[in-house]
Length: 403
Image: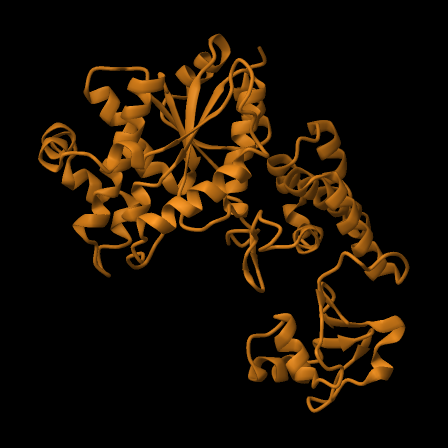
């Protein structure tokens, strides 16, 4: 069995670990049940979850057992990590709906068959029926409030206000780890680096009750060179659901990443071998675009399948070369072709308001059929619809077909 520690380390996933030497030894000698948590605050996963799924996939391929915990119970509270204010509380019905949608997406990435088949659990099954007094006595008594307040996730919220409701999130997540440890023999909790404080809480809780084989590991968040989280588009989050983010838009996002992010994205979000990744990352200037095309295709193939990846690639190539099939690019159907350029910009979602649309035109950021639009009062007509469509473009990277 290949030691997955070496794979995770070489590809740059690992950010922090509680017990590095023990974790590496553990991965090398036995099949380790591990868990990652997913907060069901939406009915689809987004790019922020993608690294977790890739890590889980690498782990499973090396013989370890994934436990995917969907936080149906903790979502009623909301994780305060990285938040500046309290989340809106969700109803049980909304959470249950989101959990069902997320389950279907996870099944695309991780196998639920075989010797180390993954399982999905919902912490609502054990958290919602807890007796408050007993929980506070058995679990709450093992946590130091002073230590909790020193955690980064709570420190950031102290000035704006932190409710006891939110503060109990760490206790709930820590109890999740204990429950999975006792029920499934789960020894390792993994998550993004913003979960470090919560993961430490669970590891410490298990060790406080006399067990010494609980561990935590966090992986790097997917960020740009400026340190901003990747996965944001003009329309918001980059979703894994094709109904929310089309395969073409998904492909284009990765096709247009900054040069400095290419190697990291290839290592974290594809299964390409490392020697191939190093070869692609060494490309310079215009040649780096070939690496971006490969990254975009491989990532889109993982999420949406090879057929959709090929369609997205074909549409992208057609736009840049002027030849090929444009059927798979984002298309907006117009009720009337005699639409103002500002209304067309808003209709496609390129800008949310006429004020912002006007600014884009005035700054030279809008093109129609590769011709810059300089008149904010321009109205489209039949002559703009060559072969039955017009191409509206913002800058060099955002395209829409108007029909």
